[in-house]
Length: 325
Length: 103
Image 1 (cartoon, one colour):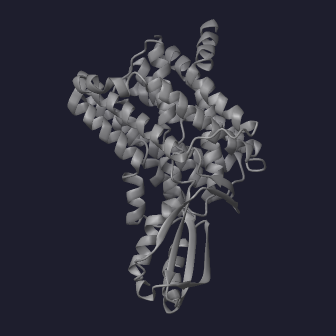
Image 2 (cartoon, rainbow over the protein chains, first blue to last red):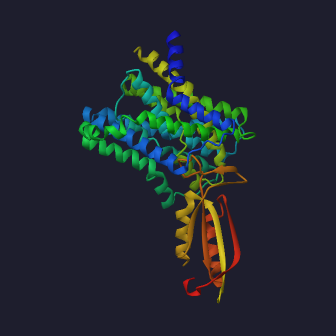
Image 3 (cartoon, rainbow over the protein chains, first blue to last red):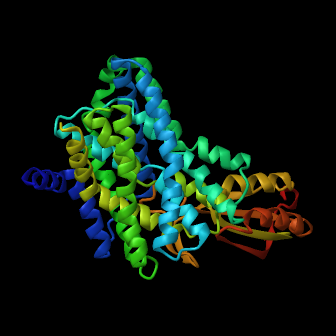
């Protein structure tokens, strides 16, 4: 119990989390603090490239094995499955219409790469290593959930067909292309390649992450501030319960795969996190009748905040207890 | 200076739909338009702003076309097929242009 409190406190008073809290507070007190869109996108591109490259370099150093392929399959399966659980929970816990429930479910099957990065940083600060290919697992988990969400909506006659524009949005959205592309470059060039760019992509990484989370705090805070009347108690509860369910699914998959403690935690985080970049764009194309404010406020305002502050330490504790590490 | 009558069509639509809209306009023979970023606003889905956004889902763009009046119906039909189910605003105004051969 004492270890738990120390871990939670260490996480909560880290510069990364405090930057996020600063953004939240600034939004709540209606400060005019803001990031121009171009800078926010620039920070996002930097983080995606850095995490992808480091993951690829790590795989290059440790080699490819069957476990990598199985982990990728498990990631795809989780991403396909989680929207069905989220949809069932939403229909049980809330009164949101089918099309909104399907759109929200799609967000919760996909992942938040920044939550993944924050978990990676916490693990690194504790000296816990994880399989480098977890970055690739994160990338393959972005899209399958969208297909599940569209199927759920189509069952009730909602949504558009899967046209070329939608497939492009699903498979070639910028975050997936950059993450997988940087992963491939890291894999090809290995640790030597990483060493040549470490001055930009390794040393300043945490500082950039702080700035990005400050922006995320601002966006999440403004979303929450504007959500009066939007989030019912049932929806708020869903925003906390669903990541726990997703984390348990990730834990089960990770244990079956025999992942290391770090890998287990990261797969739990991927299962627990909800998308707020790739899926919202796809949902706007495919399910325009769904309320975008609902999905974004839940995934970014509630679940992202929960995962970042309490969820990640909790998942680490659970994984530690299950593995006896 | 001589001026010629034209129609100014302004379509404010979600940024994710920009490509589909401009493709539809091109297919309808409307190859001249201007796309402008929109910094923020408020509507039926509540207030929104470009600031701090990293995804395209929350953003809007304005697509502005200046065309000859007789081409208006074809443009609106093409545009409406794309924007009908989406958040946005379509408005048409009378305008005057200086160089009619360009429209």
